[in-house]
Length: 276
Image (cartoon, rainbow, N blue to C red; front, side):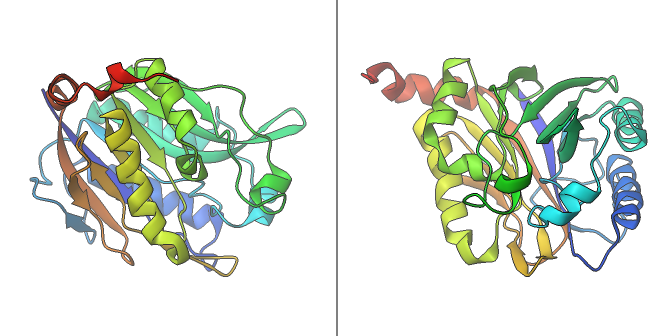
């Protein structure tokens, strides 16, 4: 079974207001899902006018993944207007949207929460980021770590969620594998300074778990941090199926062959040899 996916690598700059960015991105998502994507560079050997099965957005795109002051100032209600608008676009286009993550306020606690919307326009999954970046500053100083893993059925099979810095912790992905994951979706805000780590780690998570990985990054500058782009679609063998440029807002397109998960795990059954 082949699944058509799009990763919307957004430009997220401090120079754009949160309100303006929300409006712009909703228009952009609408354009992408209608097969138009006017003015947006398309990357990947896939016909962009055909409908998508899954669209992925990056981490904390409303406020910027490295701007902790904005995370505090602009919490996103998950039952609010923005998520409702994205849900309607998912329903009308019959597309699953991994809507990226948002600064969620729940009582007195704040989380970095990924929202998953199905093709009926229903919010069917939420993942609160477990590994918060900042070494006791930045995100780690203002947000609370999530308590649990998320694996759910989607057009990508059993799909595990992770967010950006989670990528550095292979045990999280082993946990997702043990819950049945066949693919990983990773909204991110990875900086240019460590973009070589990004490519290596995304490939490694696919190779060691024999799973598809969709890793959606962003570009722009936030709180003096330059974001590195290079969103990736990696197959279970660790092959790069599609990669976005390092410095451009764009739509990365690919086709995901779900049968490759079973075929690769049968051909190279390393997972059966695990001892720990």
